[in-house]
Image 1 (cartoon, rainbow over the protein chains, first blue to last red):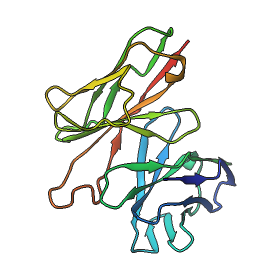
Image 2 (image 1 turned 180 degrees about the horizontal axis):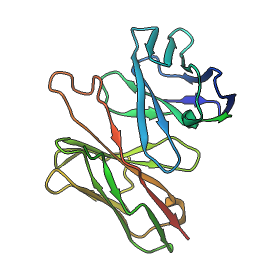
Image 3 (image 1 turned 30 degrees about the horizontal axis):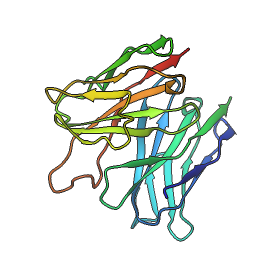
Image 4 (image 1 turned 90 degrees about the horizontal axis):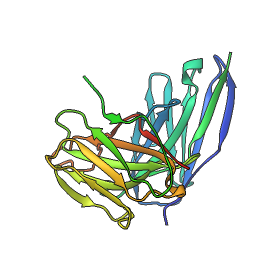
Length: 111
Length: 119
C-alpha cells in the first residue's frame, strides 16, 4: 500500500540551512511534491520534482530525489523565521490524480 | 486574483447535528477536491469533481457525507449526522486540467479550510 513517512519536528537557527526528509514506499511515483502549511492556512505548493530527475533547485529551495532509496528531501538555504510552518511531502502514482501526503514535519526557526 | 475561498472558517457543533461547508474555487478551475485533514496528519482525499461530475467519491463515507457541485463552480460538503470522529479540518482545492497533460503535473490550490469540532 501507499506509505509516506516524515519526521515530526525540526528546529533550526535563523540563517542556517534546513533539511526536511521524506521516505515513500511506492516505486511508481511519478511526481513528488513539497507543500507548506502555515498556521490556520491551507497548503501552498512550494516545489515539485519529476521522478526522472534527481535534483531541482528553485531559489532557496533544493529538492533531492534518491529513487533507489525512495528518499526525498527539501533543503531550505538561509532559513528565515517566516519559513516556520508544517511541510508535507506528497506524491502521485503513475497517471493517477490522487495525491498521497505524508503526515508533515513541523519546522521551527529560532531567531 | 482571489484564491480558493471556504466558509465557515470554524464550526463547533454537537454530535448528531448536521453541518455544511462551502467552497468557491479559483475562477476557471474545472476540477475541485474535498480533503479531510485530521490533527497531526496530512490531507486525505474525500471526493473529486470534474465540472459538476463527481468522478471519484470512493473515499467519501456515503452513509453520512454528501457533496454537490451543481453548476460546476461552487461546492458544498455536508455531514448528517456528525460524529465525534468527524472533528478535523476540511480542505477544498481546485485545479485547471490541461488537455493532453491530464494529471501529469496538476497544480492544486488549497483554501484555508473549515475547522470542525464535534462535541
